[in-house]
Length: 176
Image (cartoon, rainbow, N blue to C red):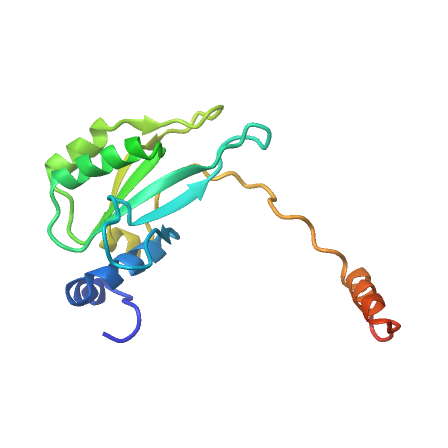
């Protein structure tokens, strides 16, 4: 396969040909960061996504942990993921899989309960199972997102140019 999959048959081909590359591609669909850059023991964590759901004063970085499975899936994977989010003190765990989840998998996920952010009424499933087909159709991970400015404002172009020129000893001319 050349390039990234854009449809389910392409994703299936990648999963079969290169499960490790499939894992990286699947994580990119949800905006998660891969945890390992090399093959090896990942301790049940293929990727992470960080978020904030509290005001600035009390803010702690929270996380969603991802596990990606390219082959046959079973309820043991959901139990393992639940153990990983408990061990890592994560708020949400997501199992991304090529195949549709089984009824026992869905039951295991439902039994994990919900994550309720402090001060908010919303609830998010602690364990979520997403298929590649769902992700390609636009479904995403359910987790809290606070919209706030987190970066310092950049200086105005004229002032920045003047400061830059002052460092070099030249005067500012031109359209500034």
